[in-house]
Amino acid sequence: MKSNTLLASLILLLPLSTAAQQGLLQSWREALASDPSYAAARFQLEATREKVPQARASAWLPSVNGNANLTYNDNSSRTSTTTTDSERTSSGYGLSLTQPLWRPQSLQSLEQAKLGVVAAETQFNSARQDLALRVAQAYFDVLVAQDTLEVIRAQKKAVAEQLASAKRNFEVGTSTITDTNEAQARYDLVIAQEIAAENDLQVKRTGLQQITGKPALDLLPLRRNVALPAPVPAQQNEWVTTAETNNYAVRIAQTNAEIAQRETSKAKAGHLPSVDLVASHNQTRKPQTGVERSNNNSVGVQLTVPIFAGFATQARVRETLALEQQASQSLEAARRTAAQSARQSFTGVTSGLAQVRALEAAEVSSQTSLDSTLLGYRVGVRVNVDVLNAQQQLFQTRRDLSKARYDTLLASLRLKAATGALEEPDLQAIDALLQR
Image (tube, rainbow, N blue to C red):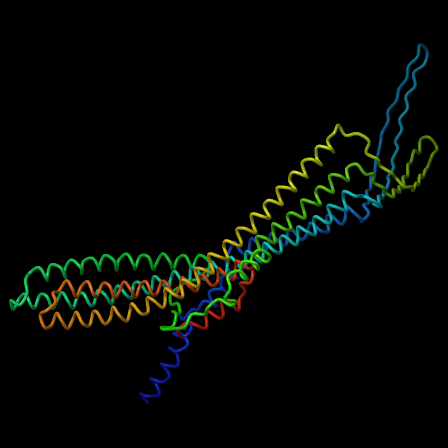
């Protein structure tokens, strides 16, 4: 009976412990549903898409307007012999239709609206990619803070043991008070570092919660001794070439340059005529005059020719040509920035991998050095401060190794982002490296 009760309790607790685990992929999907910046980009895209039917209506679709009137007239006239008063009421209504046949400026505006949607879609994809980077950055910040706190607590335990050993040796007369003071000072320092690390962990968790909208209580850490992936392709120039073409900032700048060219064409179209089909129907009633109803229908083609606008059109053309050059230079700047970002990220990945390998070797060496120092301390050839320094070196190496691993993974994501290729599968690949 007791075993059944225990089994039932374990079954009830298992889903709770599993649900508390949160991976990078889960954080990413929560951010998609909760991040306000990403939601704002989505609504901006929806708003921009509505500019196309507005521009299409001005370029091709008819417009119909109606009007109605009711007029009361009170007329009086007076001569030297007579006075005449008259009151009349008239009413009427009318309908007018205008069908654009050729409006060159409106046609350019329609093409601009379509390009604006392309730019907005690219901006939305860029916001999605930026969200992935922000989630990964915040997630890794929490893991670094967790690892730092864990290392500091392990260091505190080791220093506490060394402090207790120094006190025992002082009591039996095999060491001086200096060893105890050294260990006590190092222990107090570690306590202060632990407090700072706990506060930093809370701040980092709050940062991730700001993006996902949910508390980041128990995150899955990176597996120990996991092999970090190298960039593919392995040539930096290939990444740079791709970034100069596919980077989202470059795409947006390229679309903006095309919009600027259309703006120049629209300004030049200010010299061109426009043609509209116009039709109208009007009905008027004046009962007092004996006219019960009069109808007037008309249909025709209207040609509008701009003749002179005070040189405003020429000035507008010169303005748009300058803005077109500005957009071209912005495109070149975006390409250079994307190329530099790809170079930096590629270097970050390759140097990060080398740094991780070096720190892994340093961790082994530091552990060996600590073991040797402890042995020397026990046989009396090393002093307490040597042990404390060896401990500090080992734990500092572990902290550096932890941070280097996460920095390398983040650099790999930034490298993908520089080429506009960062997608959910890239987060899935990193999520698979986490310890479950």
